[in-house]
Image (cartoon, rainbow, N blue to C red; front, side):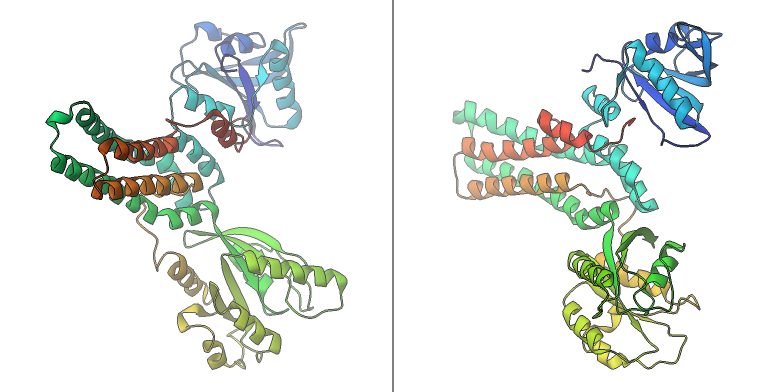
Length: 458
């Protein structure tokens, strides 16, 4: 499969200024030359040059499209193979015609993520960098983008390789003592094992500290906006999204389904779920919406409970506050620009003062306080330094925890003076688990599973 020449559309389908078709493989220049006419032949052109010309139908020499072709010869390309990128006019018909001509010549349509997979298999990037490419594409905020970019640059890879190097030194020391036991000083060996294992475990703990924040930056906080009808839930969603995403009227029950929208608040990505107002209703459609609201409530990481400051608390709102008192909830007292009728002391009996935010969407007050309240819950009041290496991938987090457990087993065995060849088994397990993170010791099925998450053309 790696010897095949592959092609795919690398830009979104639809109308646009340009569209790019990427071709990669040993024969990419040969195949493109069959359908491309320019003053300079690609086979004799310098690498990293751009050429103006036309895509033609080989049989009739009829011009099909006016294009720019970029040439990147191996190994100075993303895949470390010969890569040709054809930039044509954006549009479904033009792009399809060019791609079809390539496929007729014998080029194979690329599988999802196959370009990045080839970059990994050819040694240009490791597995953490490859996975970070997905995060880069899917980033929902500037901070999430920066975290992914640092991963692509290899920040995490360098740290993992350093930890593995420490463990290799340790294993080499143990191997020597296994082969030449007459020269072993047991106390010195045990102390050496403890020092090295403690060092690696300390650095693993330092990475895991960032895991919760990294996971949030990567995936966003699933946030349900709940409350009775007409308290301003949809208005809040529209304000945070900076567009009229949800219909807002004075008619109770306007929102009948869960509306999803990603927003960025103070560098924190939120997946907002605007839910139907929770109330008793005889409307069958609204009943379904209320049930979906309750499901969203149960699955959300964060709940924004919206109350109308201009209205007295209702029985169902008090019941909802009791239900949410032990969950990650921020209470929003909306419409503070109107006369206050709501009993704040009653709300304080269920939630601490720092979890209550006063808001007026009309006067644009309270959004900054909401940002601070969210940061206080998930980031202990602030985000970590942007220079920090975040661990955000669930697979990486799991493997770091496994490696830590293996090292703890080695330390426990070391304290009980278990033979060092037995301790070596746990140390090697930790080394292999760290290797799985960067792809040094990972199965083909896992590699395939990871790269199928990519879009075509990447």
